[in-house]
Length: 185
Image (cartoon, rainbow, N blue to C red):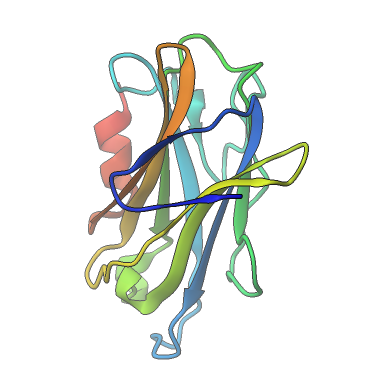
């Protein structure tokens, strides 16, 4: 049975292969322009910086160099139920230099489209065992991010040889560029 996490809560993953599923719905009071939310991952070393530029996984770079992290593709509308985007992670292949994986969701062209996470609802991140489809954990964002255009949903990190997930739920309004500037060397 999956564990429903609260902000700040941490939990062991205990699965060498798992999938990160992200989902969201758009409020009916939108801007009249389509919403395009994008999941991005930053594969960080001990210094909390990208191991290399190729360790930034997003819609234009769908795989890590070691093929341990594979983004299944960009969902341009978020329509339908269930996961809107998925990232498959195989810890048996992951580069030893990777100590943390930060999961971020941003709104594409948020400023020009006048969009923010206050117009998004039912946002969640979940982790499930890739082999069995058993859900391991889920974190539902329950905050109203009325001015934010980017949210760090959570982070997967290695602590003493064990991989854990922390529910973060931290938003900011400077989009993906802000996260890139934080994590780039």
